[in-house]
Image (spheres, rainbow, N blue to C red):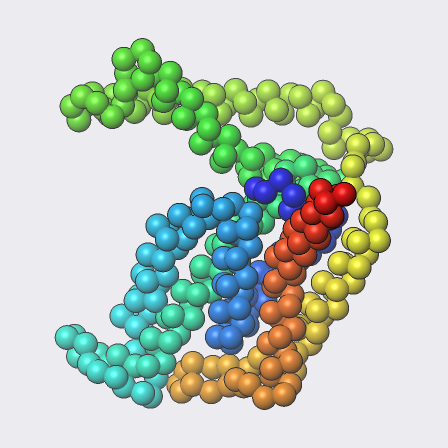
Amino acid sequence: MKDQDTFSGLHPVINFLFFGLVLAITMCIQHPVERIVSLAAAVSYDIYLNGRRAVRFSLLFMLPMMVLAAAVNPAFSHEGVTVLTYLPSGNPLTLESVLYGVSSAVMLAAVVLWFACYSTVMTSDKFVYLFGRVIPALSLVLSMTLRFVPKFRDQIRVVGEAQRCVGRDPSTGGVFQRAKKGVTILSIMVTWALENAIETADSMKGRGYGLPGRSAFSIYRFDPRDKETLTWVCLSGFTVLCAWAAGGYYWRYYPSLKGVIFGRPGLMFHLMFMALCFTPLAMDIYSDINWKRLYARAASR
């Protein structure tokens, strides 16, 4: 993650509320404009946060997944009135099923990328801060689970390097030798994971985690910037939800394509959702520009 991500420095309530709103709207609203906007914002923010790693992830994983998801729907669903051609099985290939598959692929990719941004911004300490007093046991388990994946990946790299140094490289030798070396590494990792979980549980129990009346250290405080951002997120999210409830984002794929594309109210609703999705990136870009301006002014003196 970038060292100076402005949105990550906001209060955890704002971070959690933003991601919850964007994910819920992306999954519930079927309008193609909203899903494309959500995907574009998720890709942009993920690249800003994770750089080349996000680009590599999008090209190597997201694109094949989107192609597969888009191809599955027309292969199994043959609803729709606009027949493009007929498959070798005799079933029709309809325009509506193709577009619905593309829309589902865009939605799936947007959700995955938003969760990638969420895991970078919403660290385990933020999650425990939000839900530690309400659901202490569940929040601890979820925090440990989210934290376990990167730790497991780093630890398996360490174990693999150690095994390679003692002549047990799992990438060399015959099939059975590689399998034996891989099972050894897996056994080491399972033992490490169990020991780590026990140590963490004992440590939290020793600190009185979850006991009534227990105080907790917190570095998060609401400042004027947090209040302004929270007001904007609530206002824009409420506007989008009200527009959705009033039919401003109406769209259907079956049996024929029908919905509100543009127009004065429709364009305003699209722009509002776009402004909501691009809020983190806009804050970061503004902060970077302002910082460069101040640095240039100080350097010129």
